[in-house]
Amino acid sequence: MNWKEEFLEKMFVEKDIENGLLLYIEKKPETIFRYRYGNENDKNALLNNQIWLSNMKCVDDKFEGQLEISHSSMNLNFNFLEDLLKEKVETIIDEIISTYYIACFCESVQKDIMWSWYANNYKGFCIEYYIDSFENPQFVFPVVYKDSKKIDIDNLDESQMYKSILTKYSDWSKQDEWRIILPFYDDKEKGKLIEQPLPKAIYMVLCQDLVQNKMRGSAG
Image (cartoon, rainbow, N blue to C red; front, side):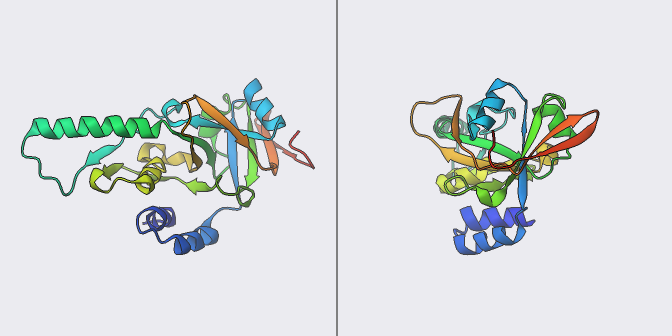
């Protein structure tokens, strides 16, 4: 178990918040990076000191919010009863998931895959933030990567939902992702804007070289 998995276990399973935060403080990176496509919405958000959070149902991974459901204590002897139970639980979980909004970050500015997918094939930009500049409730969590995202419905609570949202399939592990997760219980929308901390730097790719523009005084 790596430190990120241990951190999530302490925070959301063992509910050992104190030791979980101590581990986080010891291991977290100094800065994290947010790749942007570079369209008008991205530019306006940067100029207005905002970050866009996407609804969990509108992200690129089609398996986001889809959980492998198990039940440890229930003994269902008929397959059709088990199917009915799973269908009901999946409907409830789908409704819960749609109330969560996320903003995604990465541990490195030098990831070709991220520049290709999320920065318009190197035509966009990447924003660097000090991780300590994010304050509650905008806490930034590490993502862990596993072959299974199984969740036990017998122990389903908000903490388990957070842990599931912070778990992605191993195929996505090259992203080294971190996330802000915030629930909004009002009308479901494609995304929400929240205030952002002042960036440390903005990066662009020019002539295949990484160019860094230091931010001084204002994100604008």
